Image 1 (spheres, rainbow, N blue to C red):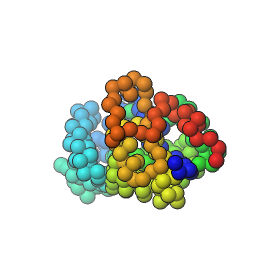
Image 2 (image 1 turned 180 degrees about the vertical axis):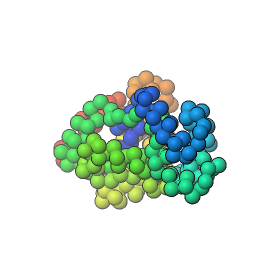
Image 3 (image 1 turned 90 degrees about the vertical axis):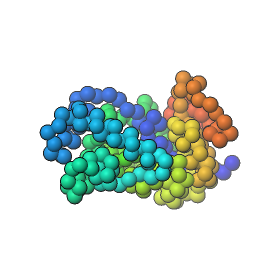
Image 4 (image 1 turned 60 degrees about the vertical axis):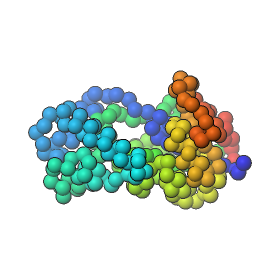
Length: 241
């Protein structure tokens, strides 16, 4: 096996988890209707957005494509509103729409693992399917983690989604590391394993709870190189370089 020099992390259910926060979510719903200047009830309006988002998400999965935030709103989520103005609000609207789902916080021990892997000499990166281009840079800055991630590859910025191998290859190029020296840590046996393998990454790791794993069927197609149940186990797999 090639020496691993770069470790790329997924976000949802890997480095961060979604938590419910009604005050936070309610504020985001109100902000969306204010931005679009509609007098519709915020809850009802966002329920309509959720239904439209499911249609968009199906299209994105089938095409391994992420629409620009302006197009997300003018074509999929709010096509009945003035297009030029809606397009100009796309980044903010998308950010707020994500907040209607809840707050995202780092998994327990996540910060310590990031700092320790960096101290041990690994190049770190993020590869994630995400509709917003603003959320992750803001979050990394707020957490003081920006200097620790050399590569951040987001589908909302690149227009391509996992499991397309191209998003992994872009991330590796950003990090300046050959794919065979990269590892990807994700939570989805199908999407994250196949994409990692097709990109020629040296290793794939799935972070999944024992309960979730019990409900999965592992085959030669989706079998990762390692399965872990806690992010802290990365420190057992990757000693100092």
